[in-house]
Length: 60
Image 1 (spheres, helix red, strand yellow):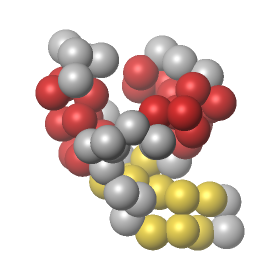
Image 2 (cartoon, rainbow, N blue to C red; image 1 turned 90 degrees about the vertical axis):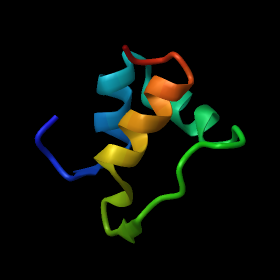
Image 3 (cartoon, rainbow, N blue to C red; image 1 turned 45 degrees about the horizontal axis):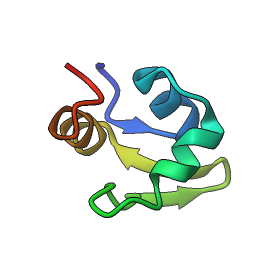
């Protein structure tokens, strides 16, 4: 991905899951902390999410 920030919808698309599932995944130990909270919701650094997804086998 070329974007630097991701919201729940972008994370869901990357992982091929629902937004509700992303909220569940956030509860897991090791899930990256959000970078900031904007009016649209929480945002994460895409590199942090992609690294976590690769390390946990959710992304090749």
